[in-house]
Length: 210
Image (cartoon, rainbow, N blue to C red; front, top):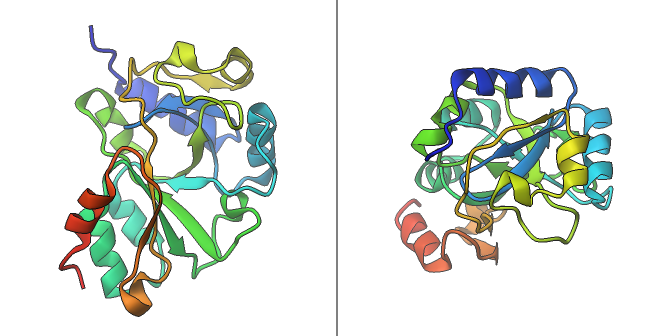
């Protein structure tokens, strides 16, 4: 039986994050853990729960594309085109952080923003009602295996969070990380980690966007 995230679950996630909490939740790839990307205290708590190195960046996740395009100031025509063909999707895009925003997520690299907009399956579609972004990383202990189910999330992380939502079994392969920081200047891009979307598929999607 499919586990469905409903409107009440989405509101619980929004309320948890906006009040400074940390939540475990399902995405289009693996289970994630999240907090407010502008709340340094919440970010520190998330990092402590994961045992994640304090200076290592995390991604900023929007649950639909339009809020992301609106929030990211200074996107070039080429960058916007790349976002529109790659997102929503199982990718993390590294972009120039021209606004200097979301410092809690960017950590030691404030000039770079990691962006996620998941491709929400029908069972997770209620998350699309959440307008504000979250700071997100995999719900595992740092360096550990990604979690495909809520039960696969380490108990210390699951129990230490303020909220844990069960979205049932997920695909289980992490997002593909694509560096687009030079895309505007010379059209180049680089896959730093091949995950749920192959490098060949990335190449096919980006071809013709410039």
